[in-house]
Image (cartoon, rainbow, N blue to C red):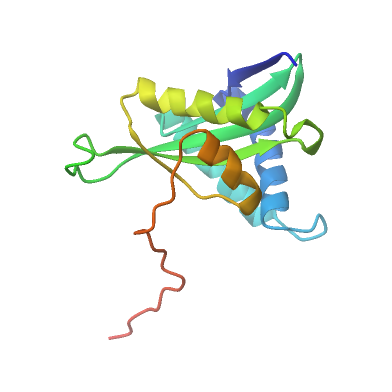
Length: 160
């Protein structure tokens, strides 16, 4: 299988939106009949801003002219620490391969390409969230569980 990874540009915004919405519908089990205009609008604003500012790198996996997968990596800054003096971080996201092409290494190519983009920018602290089906891919590419991480489930407003 001759697969090429190509960087998405701001001029690819319509393609990026199509693929992002496809990923969100599958991952979050959003029905095609559910209204998603607000979600789509928020993602379009994100892409327009982050791609232009260099805070997001997106790519497509292509077989010839046909796109068969996609992915992205969000680049951001946190406070420097002993394990990350530069404070530069990346968050891997939106990794997706069309169902008929899964199990053929396409996802791995996307992940390795995006990680390579971060490494070229001297970013060594890279995070991601995974689904159960994606776990094997990320373990294969060198990602490890982070047992000390937590996520706030609800935010309560303090009315004092």
